[in-house]
Length: 467
Image 1 (cartoon, one colour):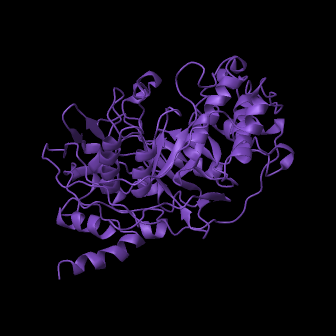
Image 2 (tube, rainbow, N blue to C red):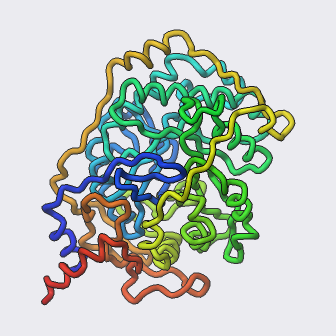
Image 3 (tube, rainbow, N blue to C red):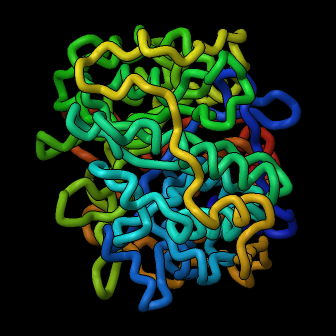
């Protein structure tokens, strides 16, 4: 579209770069105190099969694919992606640079589903060894130089029921300790490390208390999670509400958190269509004083049927769930949401057995010693060290074929690079219309209606091009 092309031209000379963020209280902030509400997307094209070290490929190794996906995510207003399974030994510079220019931070899991590359939920001592830690440190090294690397997940749903809570918790804290010490000793900036939990209420609150408390009450305890995230799918169907989904209970339970909390996955698909009404609570007064946003699950359509786009051999098609999400995000007053500040300090709770309520959940906070050989890695760094850097992209135009939800070709699709912003607006393209009978009317041209400050500054300049 002409407007979208004009935006590309306007921004073409800018060196797009996100500001590295840090944690201040319960917010992710830049050096000026501007806070980020995460508008995230789970990004693992190909599912777990998309990571195969033997192939030399992973989700962030395909430049043209990243260009396509970043451009389509810009239409939604995504400002962060979560990537689960990555190979530290291959180059990610182009994809990292594309998402950086598109205004999107990267949230990186250090584990993978392959043997020896994650802590097991049972008998964790059998998987906690120096070679495993070396692999997690390699992920840190590979992504730490990118300014848009926001955080690292030390684990994902390692505890998902009471049996898995019997022995695992100390190892969860140990991995966080080891990663934070490695970053402190070897990385130029202190990238946050935290945990992504399953929203299983039998173990959720004990999991939070276990990873978020501070040994001896010390805020700088290296085994304490810097943030807490949860994968929650309790908001299901068109009739669900803040109360019926029990999201209200999450806010009540985490209202005094001293660290950032956010959804590392959300988007229940128990019904054929997802209407994304939960976004109004996540980015509204119901939740934004406690939660720092969330991550939609997930980008590409896989066997589990959670996708927003379907990648075929010849083309990628926008799905109706994408359009319904676009409509809901378009209703949010982003200028208000992204101007939130840290809302007061909250005290860290000292670790103690009394914090753990469920019978059978480990309540001992004695952590395992480093495995043989790990201390040398943490003190001196791994060898060889993977290293990434932001690189120039020769063209922002998308070369891969994309069609809207009705099968019509989307033309002139491109990433719009933006300078130093915490949330970017949109590519002004038509992606098709969702069924609005349940989810509200779309605007006339199908474009997302929200407009943060950066776009308020850009659009007057665009208007001059048509004068």
